[in-house]
Length: 200
Image (cartoon, rainbow, N blue to C red; front, side):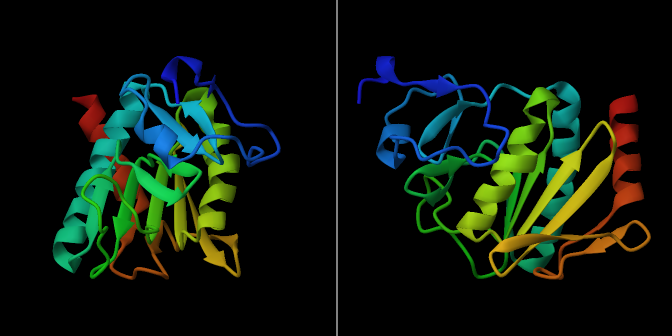
């Protein structure tokens, strides 16, 4: 594949998953490092750098999950980490978690379906997380998906049931994963940590 002929798309369609495109894992691996892209349903989507507040939230979330993984024997990884979900799909979620005993075979990319994937909404690309990736992660069999909205300071939790996501809620601001019970989060405490971190 000649990389000069690659078509990059800016955003996903309003209806959800795009139609299957022509590109596959081998095409993705032949790309240069810049621009950063994700392969979704055989189409390349540019993944621009997020804003600094998004990154501050990501850092606090990574610290939280590092502590969980250290205590449980799981594995938590932050972006950019290639996750090979299907031959036509390689994404870079903001954070992923694998429970104890589940490890990728490759050191180059995650080649198993994560137990939990987290996306932090950033700017005008929120539809990618809320619509296309929601459908894509369900199709790939990701058991649990979280979407964080940093501006509104809201967590949304989705659990895969019979191939489709069902919404779950925190109990009085505290959430315990039904799929990975070692994964918990106190929402008010988390956002307070973020506020302290960005406030200096």
